[in-house]
Amino acid sequence: MKFFIDTANLDQIKEAQDLGVLDGVTTNPSLMAKEGISGTENILQHYRDICDAVDGDVSAEVLSVDFDGMVKEGEALAALNPQIVVKLPMIKDGIKACKYFSSKGIKTNVTLVFSVGQALLAAKAGATYVSPFIGRLDDISTDGLHLVQEIREVYDNYGFETEILAASVRHTMHIVDCAKIGADVMTGPLSAIEGLMRHPLTDSGLATFLEAAKSM
Ligand code: E4P
Image (tube, rainbow, N blue to C red; front, side, top):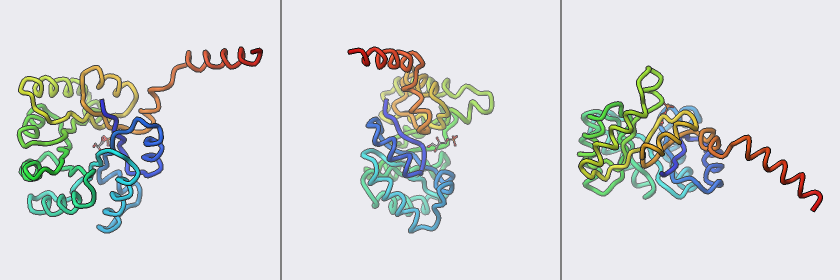
């Protein structure tokens, strides 16, 4: 399973990259705004900086909601770096734009996916990634992981190559559960990734070994 970090914060991106397990980055307008990034030139520069900081794919979301606007924005984003994945909302024009970009060999991530039908449509449009938002479904008492499981089943039935990018991952167990289900990618915060390495028996075992080492 690929690990993406879901942030626009360069320090956290570099920290995850230094860990050696990072495969890419996802951003969204809320995450960019949180870092105080605004204005077209600053936004483009920030995406360049993110691409320089990581080896893998970097999802950059369009702000337009009409086909022509998405194409214009997406082409400008894709021209920044081959690592850029054009992130498109799961709406009618987003699907059209997804087909447009996929037929041109430009990578896409269809975002804000909350149903199997939406995921099926994204795959038909040639999406590179589809992003079911598991945390936001959990927030409304709906099983987000079950959606990932259903998408896995449908994609496997037909051999769709679109990768399931489990998004809106909120904690460490989400990552473990996504791995069990067979999500291709997960994107989450650094804290959730770091949670994977923690175990009290590891800590106490290491403390014992270090104590013993003093008498070696
Ligand atoms: C995915 O690409 C989104 O940026 C993200 O995972 C949304 O997560 P949230 O529900 O925690 O905002």
